[in-house]
Length: 531
Image 1: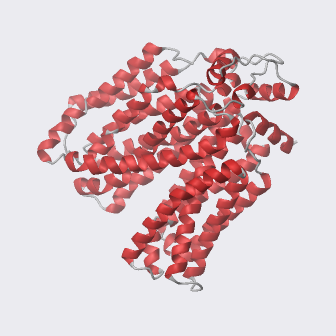
Image 2 (image 1 turned 90 degrees about the vertical axis):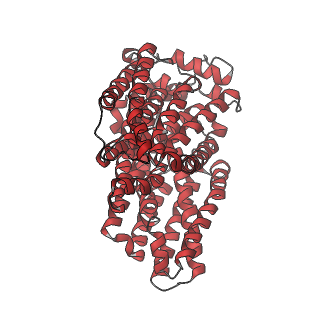
Image 3 (image 1 turned 30 degrees about the horizontal axis):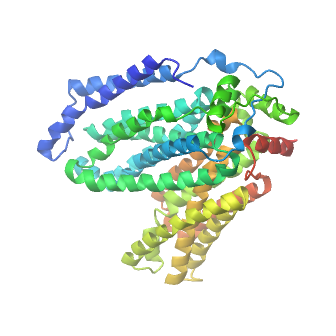
């Protein structure tokens, strides 16, 4: 589906780029002071640019919006869009184009928040603030990702997956001005918006992928997309810090948001709209056109009774009725996924964040502790390969539950070690490796699974809700860390292990198998389970 008002979109994008570029004169003035801008008064160009960015964003947003009246027509009785004609084909050139573009989008998405760690040392020195004060940057970014996941999920269900992705990319570009802010407070505000755009792009990328890729390849490609995109994003952030920071200071890492976001915009011609979104929005002809692009055949045949029933449910489910996700079979699975997401956030942004200090308390030398974490992180990389294989060849829900259980057991092992039962370097090494591998596997499967189980009309909202839960867990982890909870290894480990175990039990009881099933068949199974 093309832009509804292309002139408005490109005019808005131009205004936004002009707003960002108008900050460069002040940034370039910093070359005489080691690229330090702290305390500089904002000049007229900068103030004008700050006004142009929201104006351009709003204009571009208007250009992306389709005709809402056309998007509320119901499918005529018996006129189901035949998704199975595209679900049964092999991967072809069109699929790989989408995969490549979405890998780029996810890499850019991960790269933006990943630069926070590289930015903080230079930022604290320039603004003359403590490390604890600089920690607000990460916390505010997590808050932004939580809000962004929820808001963008709803936008994707209301206006389309492609529109949400492009809007997120535009916000990436706009928040690049964080690199030219002369005061720490402005950095916090821009970091929140940056987090919102990053949090929104992640679940929508998985949602679009789930609705485009054929059934036989959907699972493993979703998990692989997350693993490759995440790794590439962190590598890109590290490379940018290595090459650019010595020449242009930490500010250059934020300014990269302009070219990286623009890259996604330039690749927009290779980002199709989801045929399932189009069908649920009451645009069956457009849905068939997209399906023909990926299958090579126009799916016009009539469906059987079950197919028509699912299509009718999909078409009548309005994004405003997202509250239905809180009832029935979806609510039970969603509760398990959300609890798992919160637990993962507590592990990653709480327990693991304090692990270097706690390893020393458990008897591991400080240098050895850093080496141990590095080695365990390397083990997590082939662990993603195992996750992809299990998710594709064994079972989606059982694989997720198994890695949740392994995470809980690894945390329990830390509790035993702390209480003196198994205090040794070998036991600590095994527990650390198991925790990083298992938690990495959990997040690799969590959002892909969420993108498979929700109806098309609220799939973005559901995936965004689960993505937000993991970020909310990170906020809790950061807050509890400040309160000192993670200084008590056994207590914190057992508390998080209990939450993970409960989420695993809920998913083992109520989760449905998605491996080898078309998305419409998954909804049929959930409807039967709820009956």
